[in-house]
Image (cartoon, rainbow, N blue to C red; front, side, top):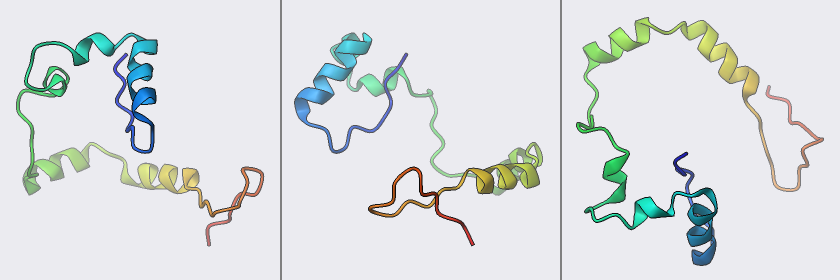
Length: 89
């Protein structure tokens, strides 16, 4: 299982220990320019074309997607515990 979570805010040793503990450390030492190229698609799209986006958008039930996103939205403020959910207005 690839470890793709951002590592910002971790100590260097924690970053080294994590892939070793889950068995993915070997990928990072392979002789390649960038180990990410082993996981990335061959052709990366850096600019979306509007006709292509419209085709993809038609495959979605936007009302359902928007509803699910709103239902799962959470507001978190400093000092607010898990037992104190904020109400979206």
